[in-house]
Image (cartoon, rainbow, N blue to C red; front, side, top):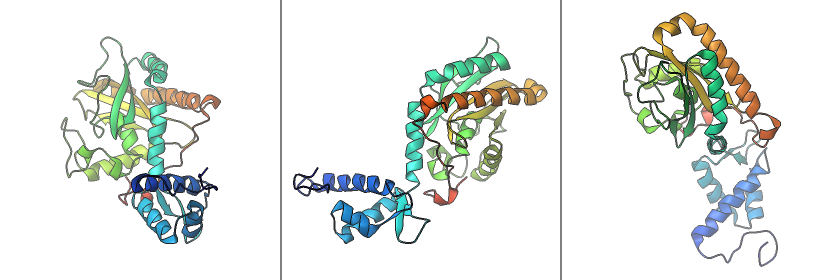
Length: 289
């Protein structure tokens, strides 16, 4: 409550910066209560600020992707696409790697292969758990805590296909990418085309793209139907075995990922609602993958 009565902001708060930050946070809370959108005039009135300040506030938030024009009617504003990115980070942070251990152990046993789990952390792929048998095909240098090479690993492609290019790692923003083998996808155009298939099928392959002689298969683990991935899980096998057992391995990994997704979407996890799919035209860069 304001010391002057009412629910408006504290006009006497010290520091213009803190006052502006408080207005932004209060504005976002107000906008969130109006799914169809709210006009700037009504927003300014609830914040107890001038109309011109309201326009400036909305313009600043819109520039950063926190607010966007409503599709319901002109002159209304709703929460913007930036919140999808923040929500993905919140969900990923809530998923502790320990919860993926039994998933990988089952995958390792049923596929008789080295199994991996990865999360998207701080704007890049991070391998968080590995389970493998002695003699199983390993990816060189890919150990627990490994970060990077999202374009060359099936685990990374699962995430890249769901993100707008503006949210790709910095090493994927140039005209060419690092080649780990002669099979590595090394240009944005080729990667974007490849990722369309990954997104459509929910299945990613690394065909000796990171390490010669090794092939990988990865699928997403999701929370809720049609949700963005909260983890990716996969296996690595010798190229010869991949050629002979591809369909069997795909069936095993899909089944296990489906079971893991169902478990994560159980009532115990109901506090995390499903996130709507990305809308490519809403991405900050203006073009999705």
